[in-house]
Length: 229
Ligand SMILES: Cc1cc2nc3c(=O)[nH]c(=O)nc-3n(C[C@H](O)[C@H](O)[C@H](O)COP(=O)(O)O)c2cc1C
Image (cartoon, rainbow, N blue to C red; front, side, top):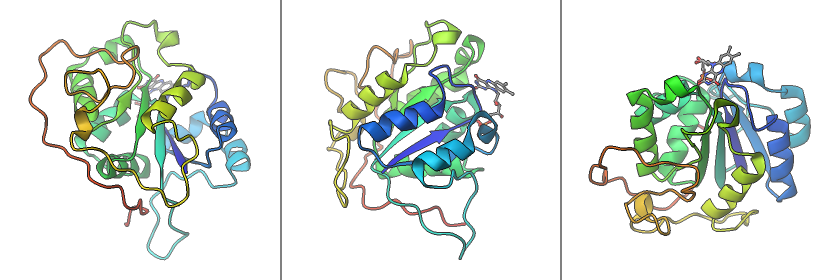
């Protein structure tokens, strides 16, 4: 199961329905989650038709609805300045950011695509958030030198990155679990600097020197429960 988590920014990579179609062509079952405001940027009816699942944006109350199927991987795109910063800080004031925080903690492979103006990208809070997220093993596809209208990678590139992040298992077996190795946060091939960045093309290291590893270590991804209220 692939979770696609979106937030309130226009997608310069094309509609999220195209991402979902591409993921489904790669044999993923897809479930879409959005921040509350992000719903305004989505074709919710079409996504629900495509996935056969409701687009979730709210926490589930006890006794309501059903638990989510376990996530094997996540694409977080487009990601606003706001959601990237809240995710990095661990602020779970909506279902989507709470889910991202939880899934990061489980060590589920996540490919995130920020979408924001150059001025916001220069904000130290955002740079710090990228630093925190990559230390936790999130693959960030972000090129601060790209023009605003080409800030997002294409959906094809995002899906290729997902394939790399999941070790090429585009359709994981039911019941499979992800085990990140001992240096999960720093084990990307060729990174050499303790950074889990699978695509050097998209993520530019910050100019300040990296602090020591945060000590974050993912263990074994056992299950992804719905977030209890
Ligand atoms: C039309 C429109 C376009 C926007 N584009 C962006 C954007 O590209 N990047 C961004 O970070 N915020 C953008 N915003 C601002 C976010 O929607 C705003 O910060 C919002 O609070 C983010 O909510 P969320 O992160 O919970 O989805 C835009 C807002 C509007 C109304």
